[in-house]
Image 1 (cartoon, one colour):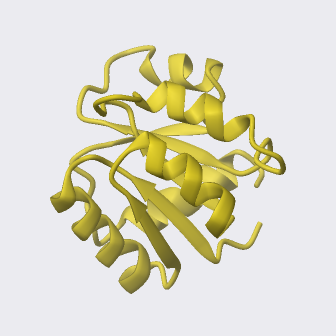
Image 2: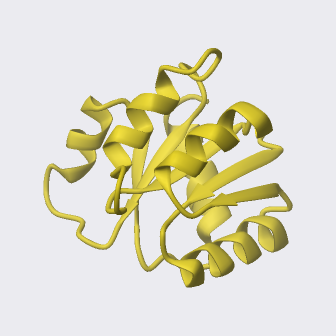
Length: 127
């Protein structure tokens, strides 16, 4: 599955800055960023990303709610969505997968290897 556009959703502007530099610079992808779940849902409709990365802990609308609402948008059932979190515990990835995510990315992520980590996860999923 070719990835051209990635949407990164996080309430931390520093994570968005580093993530965008990594995904666009190393991954060579077009990147759109959202500071909230509400903004992400609107942006998903407008931007139609090929991949979505959502922080699990955000104010107002948390990551799981954002994920659910994005999955309910037309044409987003098969778009890969990864969650990001600083608290990776045993069973955490299974929990988010049961909510509709394709996987989990630990924060802080390495900006030099983030795109490669994403592609590796997509390949392991057969995408």
